[in-house]
Image 1 (spheres, rainbow, N blue to C red):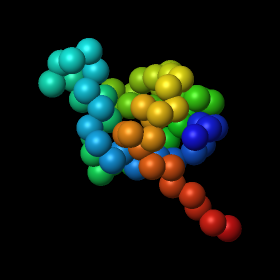
Image 2: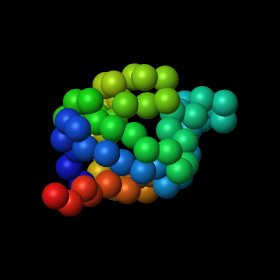
Image 3: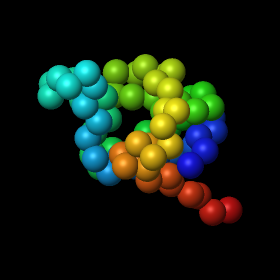
Image 4: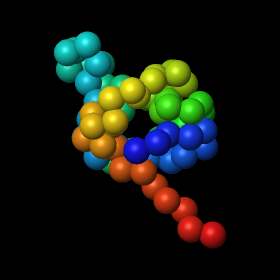
Length: 68
């Protein structure tokens, strides 16, 4: 899956950072936007959280396609 600036994603599984269960970067059921290519802005407003592992990306997110 390719991430472009402005793309929207639905989180389908909580994303825990650094094996710390209290550090949830993305919450299941929430919608997120990409403010930069290859990045999805997280719960803390971090706009440059880079997703290089595309297999991991589809484990946690579903891209929202908006039809014209």
